Image 1 (cartoon, rainbow, N blue to C red):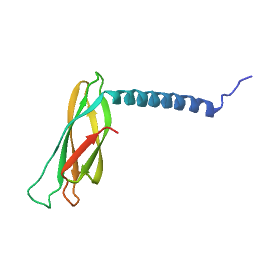
Image 2: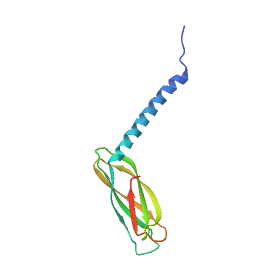
Image 3: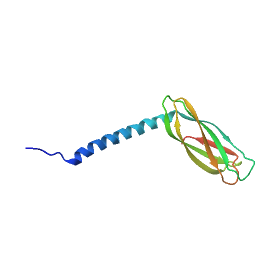
Image 4: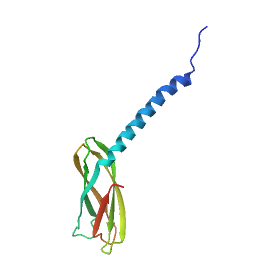
Length: 120
């Protein structure tokens, strides 16, 4: 007597393997976040008041492994310390023991006098 294998079982097995592989990749990527350090942040002050301000940020990976999709949050503040806007940006890829540059843009009013960036 010939026994038939249900199709659902054969299809489900490869799908579960793919899910495990994707999950392991995500965990490995998030472990590298501990090695990310935000360096100096420089705020540009353009002469034209209609031109947006830019905060240039140095993001360093102190670990040996490549880290992808690093989220950096930059807060633009006024001279009295009040918050103007918080901008979130992504650095797509930072190699092991390497540094990348990122730019956060603020186009609001009043003009910002300071920008502070960090990895949330």
